[in-house]
Image (cartoon, rainbow, N blue to C red; front, side, top):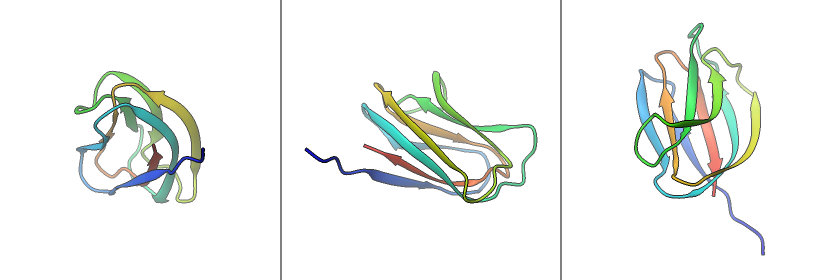
Length: 96
């Protein structure tokens, strides 16, 4: 049976916690849509339903270039949350 990916846009703004999925699922892919201007920091995606903490599923450099694609394909048994940093990149997070 085919699966249907969903996606969530994470804006390039000030530091914020973005809940992508508040229940168990799978992190499929993360695409950088706008280059970040931060340095020496990372945008972290966590296995967590509500907060930016816990097991890290992926760390994206805050100055990642637009067009960069991270094929992740990892289960997230609690949920998926992004901890965006100041001047981080805009992201499109694909999940199911």
